[in-house]
Length: 135
Image 1 (cartoon, rainbow, N blue to C red):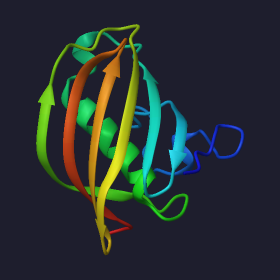
Image 2 (cartoon, rainbow, N blue to C red; image 1 turned 180 degrees about the vertical axis):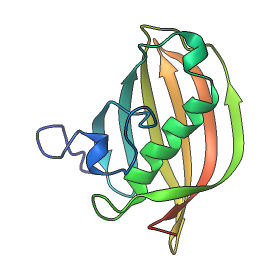
Image 3 (tube, rainbow, N blue to C red; image 1 turned 45 degrees about the vertical axis):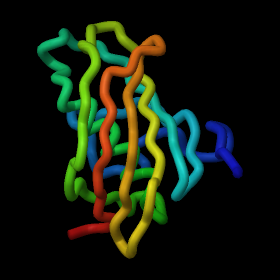
Image 4 (spheres, one colour; image 1 turned 180 degrees about the horizontal axis):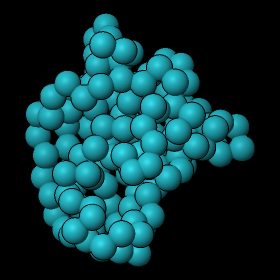
């Protein structure tokens, strides 16, 4: 198992995704093992109304897209959310840790499981299918 640390890969999610502010839900990649698992973080600077819980699912999907894509910039799209649970509220000033792992890959699809935590508390968990590449 090889984790690429920040010095060995581009930690900027914008290098991998077409999303830009305000729709880019990740600030920095912390660890990336392509096709296996990844971790990222997001510092919430807006009021709680500006960061709905559904954005936590989007954060997992974006990290999953980076994780499952084969090349920088390849990206992907959210096909389905099979399961999602929410466990807390996001507040301004929170630093979120997003984790995702590939459960299974099949062709240009990947089954992803992920969670968002803050201070050790689970704020969201989801299982989703992502399509890799452009539509």
